[in-house]
Length: 204
Figure 1 (tube, rainbow, N blue to C red):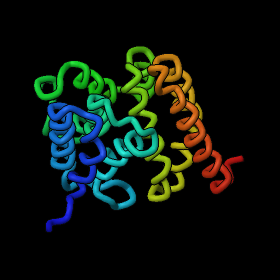
Figure 2: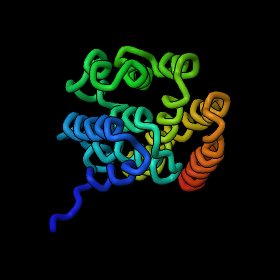
Figure 3: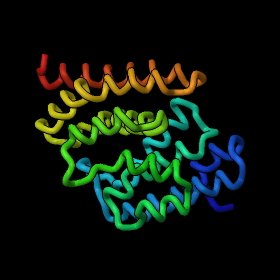
Figure 4: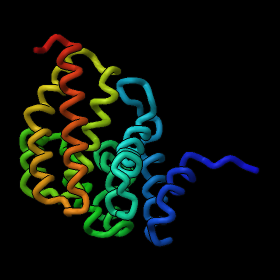
């Protein structure tokens, strides 16, 4: 009997909670993300695809949100336009619909755009799904910060405290009430990780 692949195990988590057509959207996004990020590595040396997959798994396993296919697709593909030639906005909309395409657009940083403008755009226009993915993205980035230089670690901590903790409060105003408890989970994780790195880096 053949063993389940990592993709099979991922989709198995969702099968009881999604319609077959919704599950197919997630399966397609998983393949696009893995293929689109092939050959790319993160600072710690692991293949890049493990990052969007991990962001999706934070939503699935830690927050136990398993019935929202659009949210999972956005998580899997949140870096695909920025880091890959595989999918553009038009193709995203044709495959996954306008809401997903717009969500990924809000999460995509234009290389000519200043970080401050990107964050201001998120604050002004992003939906709760986009904000949730962005904050889970930050959680995973902080969890894997050991693979980065000390300079980048300091920069990430300061940026998180200044820009991302306020995004948690904004998410709290827009997220559906059934998911309100996740605000506290995100806040505890992000503040706790920042506190640990501050102590480790002698930033206090």
